[in-house]
Image 1 (cartoon, rainbow, N blue to C red):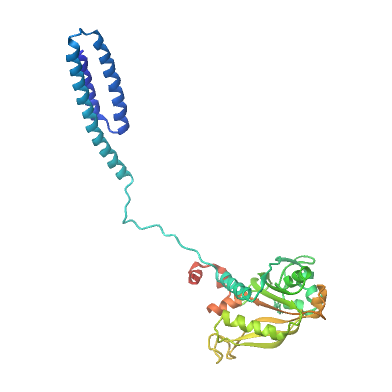
Image 2: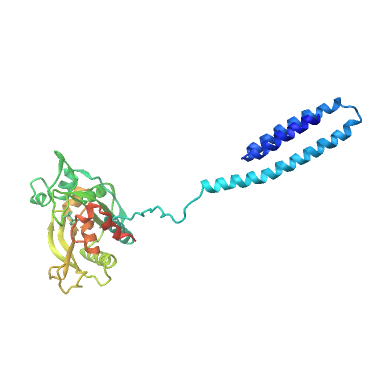
Amino acid sequence: MKEKIEALKAKIDSAIQETETGRALYELKLKFQAELKSIMSGMRDLPKEERPVFGKVINEFKEGMEQKFEERAVVVRQKELQKKYEEEKIDVTMPGRKYEAGALHPVTLVKNQLIDIFAGMGFKVFEGPEIETDYYNFTALNTPEDHPARDMQDTFYLADKLLLRTQTSAGQIRVMETEKPPIKILSPGRVFRSDDDATHSPMFHQMEGLVVDKGITLCDLQGMLAEFAKKMFASSTKVRLRPSYFPFTEPSVEVDLSCSECGGKGCRLCKGTGWIEVLGAGMVNRRVLENCGVDPDVYTGFAFGMGIERIAMLKYGINNIKALFENDTRFLKQFRD
Ligand code: DAH
């Protein structure tokens, strides 16, 4: 029996020292307890008088071993921690990973600003389709097939009578066909024309406005545009209306704003005139109202349409429309709020 204990002691002792993990130590302890139990069960075969002496020997051995297990547990825990630290070590001096924040495109910025300004005056947003019929884009807007005004806009046709809309004005018809006055809508969107130079792009954005109600006059248009100009540009911005021609408005006007660069004195931006043309507008032509089933003897309205890129170019001093479509991040970064 004594030999058995001695053998177990020697075996366990060195095994304890070899354990490297808490788990191995725990398993070893279970094994040790099982072996000790089997030795203790042999006590039954000893003469009665020898049992107390032996019991004492076993108890001391057990306590001694438990102490060793505990001591090793401390060492092993330390070793495990050390290993973990090494594996999870981070070098705080390493350069960080850079995440670039995105920003809204200047066209989107200006579109949102326009919607904000006009929503403040009670306008609701309506978005029409980019693929339009010849009827909505031209005919209903008082531009019949042989009308010379069709040449003002070089149209991309997709099929006979089906085209990429050349103007958001097409949305005016869609709204008037489905809604009864009072109407006050704002219609932003992409438009397409076969045109391409420093100030024209085959795809660009427009913002259309339409107000129809009883007693609407050109003065309402003028007052609303004055408000828009002050909010979009400087509060000192002045508005000027010039007679013009659009088939869908009568009278039609071209709207100029006092030059934001020189304040009206005359400079390179306004070509010495002090004024910059920003949009087309007018009183909705009676024929257009009739085409949509709105009685022109009861209702009148005004409409306006502007190029969003043009407003963005004026507002941010961009001199080539291409900069807005190249998506060069060095350019776009400058519009971060
Ligand atoms: N649709 C015109 C264009 O693309 C702009 C325009 C002019 C819209 C006068 C209007 C308007 O609503 O009344 O050139």
